[in-house]
Length: 445
Image (tube, rainbow, N blue to C red; front, side, top):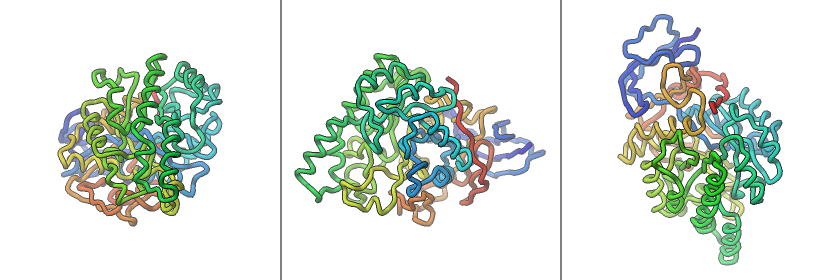
């Protein structure tokens, strides 16, 4: 029996900040109480001056394995996640081959079981012709069904309206959607290619993948979900225009339609293309500054339920190509907690709200079994943060396999000092403390 004791922590959990100790036994939180005994404890962490948070749950990442392992692997990106306080992730199906069968989905789980330092789950992919496979998905051990209602990457666009209607009607579980209207994007692409040709730059990206493309597709997804009472989760909302689609009165646990915002849509805006160019080219696009402000307001008033990353690494060489050829996506899973802690320092949101949106809400939204909260009897997924220790992002401390970050050179006002994954100290003071994999997420549905 292994025991780990965290002493003198300032625990941020369920809307409160309390001074306490936390005892961990055999993977789970055994006690939360001041003055706990260290009898039989194998390791003690003194958390004096630090905040203790539930581990961050990132419900949208692309870890590129199988088939795109020149960009990343499940193992490499899970390590980066853990170093940043992300203890659980849900990964997308647009790998190569696409995870469109139960067999291919099972292969991804097998890879993670051997190599992922973080806890893990994988979305089952939907296409225009795999409805039978989708309906075989086990709702209790898979996070959800992913539907690309816009061809962001790969060849997984679901644009057959009959298939979409069947999918929303018959899905046994949560459907997560990427919403951008393909016809709008194609028309805009033709227009700007004719105008700019090979001189196009990333500054055109929010004009090509514009507000109208997002709103058209999101509105369609919401209409389908309401028609069939589908459990719908719309990923990476990027516009002020879409906020009115979502309910901010119903408690999250009772919502049938939920929405997410990603850290890059809160942090960057269209003025940053001049400095970062293709490095922040992503789908849906980072847009005008007023959208960024509206998204933060929508997060605070509960129109938006969850903060995620949409971590999507590409090699530096791929991103240096001309705009039309450069792939969309940016690596972020090492830094979402620090990004949001900077927002806390700037007075834009509270520490309690950060924890609610990055830890509690993903667990509630996806109905994850005993995670997302610091509670006795729950899995011990925890992260210690030093609010007084700054950290500057550099190539030397960026852990993504692609080797770069859009945050390069930025100094965060806090740092992650320890990360505990399913009761194991996985990361401490800049070093990985174990190579034991995390656990497969389970769901109570």
